[in-house]
Image (cartoon, rainbow over all chains, first blue to last red; front, side, top):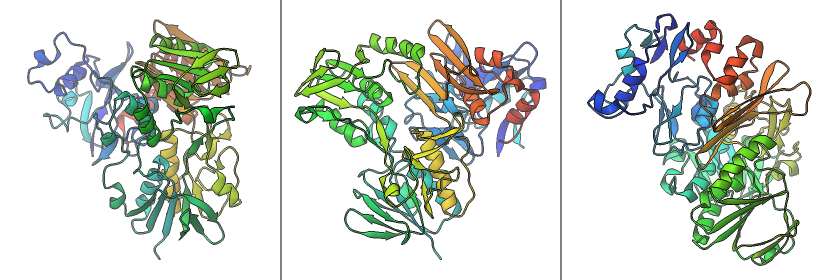
Length: 142
Length: 416
């Protein structure tokens, strides 16, 4: 299946992926309306230091420990994509406790959130990749 | 020939077992003996149910039709009372004998109640282990209820949080000198205690009930507590008797190897009823945690069906929040061990402690800053040598820039 992969040599650390992610998952059609003046809660985050940057999002592991650990039965795998049912999530954050990649985070309403490859929103393919100016993240089969 | 699988218990370990069996064997018959009359549900959510953060329709661990889809026959409301390991049969309390080729014991644990004088005089007393316990408590409490909870562990305090705001008062007592003594040290326990007290819950620590008389508790310290609802959450004991009576090896839990086999032929065990290797401690112990139950169950199921699964990096790990303050803990701590280095970081609203021994991170306690804590958990589970990472940078902030470029390439550039 296609996943989001990182080319850290190419990452400028511009954080555009975070904004595109937050916009894509906002349900709004206007970026300004979606993001202006708001604290954003992207499902991808740029990590790194003054020499190197890289964007971390869900790896969609083949045997995901977050799914096996979820105390609410809110995480599951669908056609290889790790998905979260936010209506079942109680915000215990056990998924954050176990994810070795630090790929889950807390959403604006306290539940866990994660990258679902924009398959659940209107984009249909990862908005972070589409908007990356330097191809530092790609969406492909490996 | 079609294999006959039997699972005793119907909790998360049983669900893992069913999924493990079906990952290998789509045909064999699976029979589940379920003492509780509910399909598998998320046991830790019972406090969230009291709190109104989830509802009965959402508390199920698996989708409706889970058993049908997996071809599982569930016998509800019946208890397994005897295993005959030689004959490969299990007897239920209705006198039915069920034959198995391979069996998983996933009987969980039961509340442990020490002898309190006069406890039978208390009209409204509850445990807090099952959905039925939660439903009964939900029914019993009123705005005027004065609640006494005996036990300041995970179960007692989650119960307190679930009831807070719904009752007049909540008092929690514990013989230990601190709350959550299974996961916190003195310093971190005090941070969480203060936060919970701010939210209206009172504690009586290093104290216990000497005698009950109706709605009155006479404490060891001489104090008197009047209450109308009593919740006992002193501790739990693994349900091991089926296996021990059948001649299997049992310590505090049913002893299992990393393939989830017990000492009895064709009998596996998984979940809170077991004791398996804790790699952070280097000893077997009961790890009564939901993720552990699932992973043990899955491993057992695969092996029952002829697979060769191993679950060989189990550690204690907990993510728990109270009134918006999150804590995460993992591994083992050896504060009095000269060879165990302790690193502490703290600031406004957070405290983090790390324990390093024999060149690996063996445990951590985080309160208030839990972002990306899984990076730490993974260091413990994988026994990553701390000299292969920038440990100081990591402890300040969990980041993959503290790892080698080859690790990052593997994690973020490959299929994992």
